[in-house]
Image (cartoon, rainbow, N blue to C red; front, top):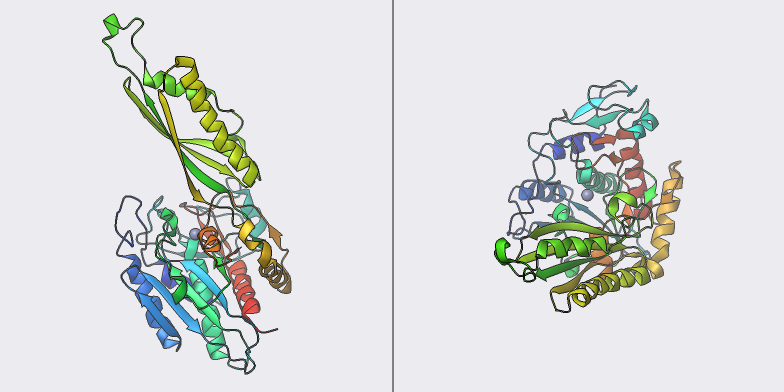
Length: 401
Ligand SMILES: [Zn+2]
């Protein structure tokens, strides 16, 4: 009974390897230890007899399992997961712990704090010891992909498509696709396996831009400042007050976009603010950019001087617009979820994914669930039955039907 499934055994092994990325680092990968997991996966993929292509310098693992279909009519399909864990919480010395038949009573996972847990009563769950994250984000995805490959190698009678896989570094610091080489990845369509709750499929995300606002003030001795001083710090607050209060991250949800004051540094002479602009809708996104431009204009009008400068840079696009012509990927994934008794649903991502960048580069890439929860947290956990179902989804998608 206490025999671990090979998926769980694999997952437990992977999470004990520290692969935390580091947003302060200027190197690629941001931390060398991400290669520890990459190397292990390369060895395991070689053992499985796959064609492995390891970009050791940038820490990307690509592998390909050719189709065993003699007619080979179905297109190749790809799966992508990331090696790193979030810089937000330590991933060192992770001690995974299995709760058998969770009954709501646990030292760390309390349903009153995390109501989602009520939906997992009776399930076997995996968590950390509460001092680190677990790393289900995204080692659940890595383990599920590896287990799927092992399954097809062990069951050559099951006819499958050509399967391309890639494991990437630094997703958590927004650099997961920086050195992703589409030429080394065999498939023209793929899924990232980096979602959470089983059944949820993600293929819409924000359009994202970052605005940098610079304000020039004029410092004068406070004793003789009358009529002369221009306090850049106060102008910064004037600028902020021009923005709608109900369009902030803390007041929005679902498809509602926002402006987020990400940072502010100021003194009398100079103020610098950065705002993140987010909206799923492309027209509204454009309108938001214009609104910030207008706010800068308003400040300059008020003071009859060019005190306020704004530059806006795009960060990533909503992948939905690149998936319009690939809705079969979504439909097949929904079918796959139903095939294991799940209830497929879609949710707009209130952020970006590597899939968004890859989709914009020509590799359509919706995001599949893995069965993990409470990411980037000491309360992170994975549902074993949902991980097993997620694995079945990957197999279903890869099979030739
Ligand atoms: Zn992730």
